Image (cartoon, protein in one colour):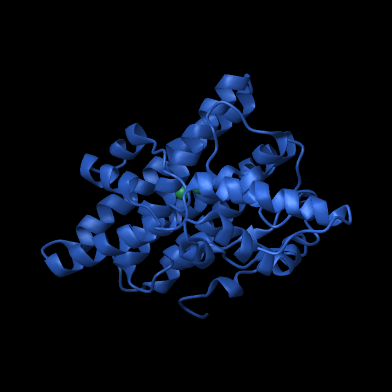
Length: 309
Ligand SMILES: [Fe+2]
Ligand SMILES: [Fe+2]
């Protein structure tokens, strides 16, 4: 069996539609509203093709090429509210993230035959947990009125975190990706409590407890595998920074500090993650550009003349 699998090789059934990662585009966007509008109009047909056959096709046809910034606020969800579409989109994004976490932990057992038995045992335990999470989120999607495959799947989590060095692999998967999951889950639990949805609040509370263990595996094994090797420690830290940066586009991160501290992050690391930015466009610029894109898109649909930029 092949070692070090690429995300294109991950198997999915016919329900799933794969979307190429937009991370590079997001990071290279200038903080200039007109320029963002120009770029998104030029790649509009490509974006439309990416969502075709999913529920986002309809959303694109209504809002135009900047739809994602109007529906998901650039990836950041408010604690207090979500539209039904935002909730389904977030649950679906987490569901495919859980599948990728299962695949990543499974690959980690297979890709590094020379690691200690205890390490493989922890990764196998993680696979068991992630498989349960996939099932739980599948049910939560149903609970929210959605269905598997209604949104396209982005594999950027797998791509950003699956490195061929075991230290960087667990830094990427068990600290960056799992840490990101802790933030999203904390916010969803608070949302569930706020709107009185006990199923969401309780189910995700159980899942979050597992994710803390996974982050802890990462914190402990990175420490163990880099012991006494300052160069490797520095490399892991730099990789962590890079990966966190790639997870930070468009908005300031809201970290689940309490949970992350419990799982072995230090205050300094958390301050650093919060201060990282992708260097791309600001949240306000993206939303403003998306509003202009929407108005121009609707005007065109109505047969009106739209001035070139
Ligand atoms: Fe999970
Ligand atoms: Fe996990």
